[in-house]
Length: 240
Image 1 (cartoon, rainbow, N blue to C red):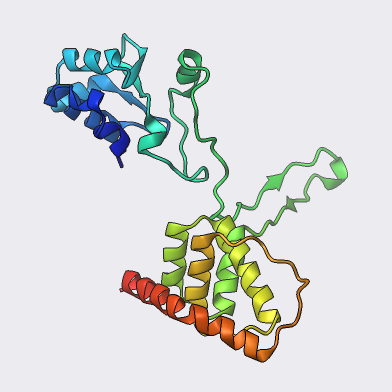
Image 2: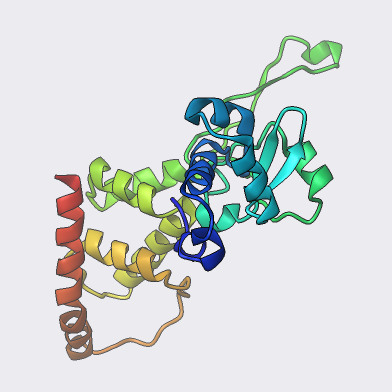
């Protein structure tokens, strides 16, 4: 992905076509932190060092290692954002922070869609030498899978949700769904309700609530039903 804020700017459009093309290829080959070996890109594209120097002069990139032509794309976060639990740190991260200590980066986090492997720990005590301590931790993705099964939502729909939303958001809205059902609210299309809830990032509800009359429940459902059906159709089209 590239940002129109950069590509439509006057300082970008004033550059030569070859310099603009080189900039695009640098973005395509950059790692998750926006660092790229420009020398490799120049050989692949048969580009010129003059274009690379122009990009540096125009402040589109920063040279990190002149000898190996390692550069950083200055507006990287405008072009690309990545989920923290999907990020792979750059092999040049230390160099990047050394040259640009104030650079903004996405901090890597543990993946939320994987159940941690069972770990075996050694015990120093002779009496417990042959014992194995196994830690079991249920990942949030496993909880989501179980809740989707509980509400009879198929795995194809789950994949669509996890492609569009992060697991923490999905799990929060599943908890909201449970609370709504406990309140006696009838939800015809659970997939559609959940999609809208994730898309709007509803805040986590509390268990405390005032009982609404059946007429009020019906009124609320009628207002949102059309929108829920539209969202469901979108989901079904993506599955197909």
